[in-house]
Every structure is written in C-alpha cells, then in structure tokens.
Length: 92
Image (cartoon, rainbow, N blue to C red; front, side, top):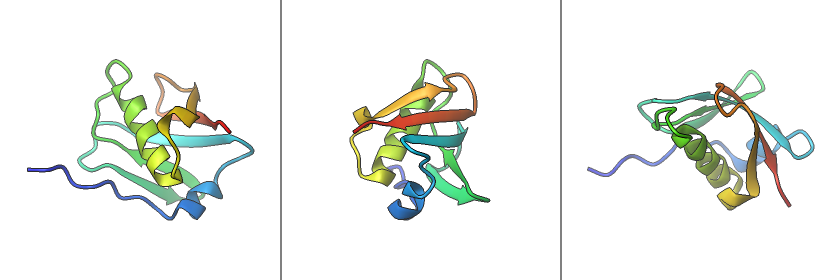
C-alpha cells in the first residue's frame, strides 16, 4: 500500500512565517502522517521518519521544500540538528 501524501498548507501562509531568510519549525518525528501545520503563528512539522542518523531532519527538509516549491538543497539546517526546535535558512 502506498503511503499517503503529505498534508501541506498554502505556500503563501508558510512564506509569511519566514523571517528574512530564516524559518523556525517545531518537529514531531515518528508521526503517523506527514504534515505541516500552522498553529498560533508557528510552523509545526510532523514526519514519519525516526530521529536516527538525520532521517527526520531530511524528511523535514523535504516537506518544507515541497510546501515552498523549492529544491531541498536550497534549505540549510542552521540550528536544532538534535532538537525538536529547528531553524532553516532559505538560500537564494
């Protein structure tokens, strides 16, 4: 059975949360479904990947890239490699 598609908010709503070239995200690894949500002015990412060997970080990068219509390589993890609170920089 194919895994369900990720639930993504409107790209403009996600872009509205970008501060300069920075985007803060709170991550829930090991979730049942992959989704991005905006709650109380914060971006929440739920990914199926476990936080082992950077798998969850890569899943979040892919989810953000899909939501923003960018290549994953244009998102750089600046802070929070081992934390649920992460900050990404959008290059370009």
